[in-house]
Image (cartoon, rainbow, N blue to C red; front, side, top):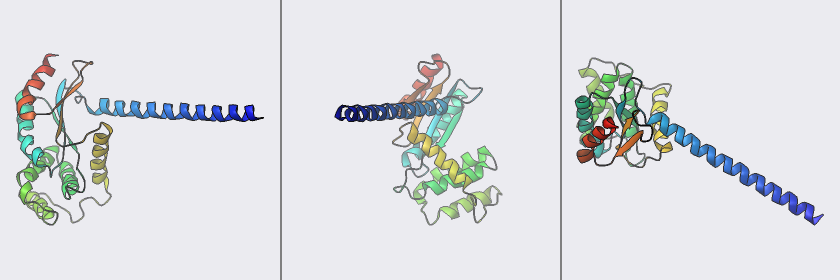
Amino acid sequence: MLRTRLRNTFGSAFALVVVMSAFALAVCAAAQDTAESVLRPPKGAQVAIVVFEDLECPMCARTQPLLEQASKTYNIPLILHDFPLGPGHPWSFQAAVMARYFDTHSKALGNEFRDYIFQNQIEITVMNLRSYGEKFAAAHKVDLPFVIDPGDKLAALVSADHDLGKAIKLEHTPTIYIVSSRNPNRPYVEVKEPSSQLYSTIDAMMKD
């Protein structure tokens, strides 16, 4: 009787280990699939710049012009993802939602709004963010409704980007990658020092 109980206990424990191991492998595979789906060039491009940014991040504001210039210099896409950093940056999430609203008019307008926020970042607060949005909208003859995101669809897009960043273990902004379809063994490289490494990394990825 005791031997039967021990066998059953061991069998249950072994089954639990198998289940937990399978779950861990599935999580790792999902994370890998997410990285592979995010860190690759868009259709029609072999190399691209991918950046996860926070509109309240001072380093993002300093880096963005460099990324835009590199995109123009090499004629490669610059793909922006939202990664608002949370309580320490209290207005960044709402600013990203506003940018998504302007995206609905045109992607170029949304990106211009992001640049505008970076340029005025030091002056922006939770209390006056709306007024900056209104000034931008008026200057571009676009209506900014009182409720920008009534169904929370734009907020969901920002959150989805943030979740992608967490899935690939992002910890800071900006996080910048040069991604390529040219070399399957090295599909992406993170640029940790954009002022000194951005152009050389793009060159290396384009030669692969």
